[in-house]
Length: 174
Image (cartoon, rainbow, N blue to C red; front, side):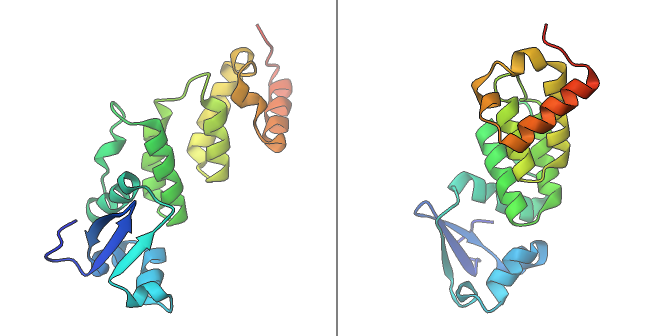
């Protein structure tokens, strides 16, 4: 991976090249297969510029495609924003096992201040396990969570769901 001598496709991310092999990428990821071997213009290009990705996250995506692991998701050292960004990319490329790896790494970082943001992200990205963990965390720490700014910024449908569940479970503010 990332060896210019043997690659047949180069992704340009944040102005930096990432060298890869079409056969590996296409065999591991259907959306990338359609992009690299379909009617899209990228199938004819040896250099593909990706504007909406970050270098670290795209390298992690390729690391996963090549090895089934992502060193940056080590729960002891994971950066929350990195894991959330990688979760979004995994969702975009329909890589459910990578999504689950991201969710598992993120679980360790849930706290009162970020749980509402994580819930909204998990809901948007259909990260079901993370969504459930965030929801349960909110129910257990309801009194503290509702006082955070991120809680007040939740979409209306999530707020309603949380408040309904809290009233149904008999959750109260201490």
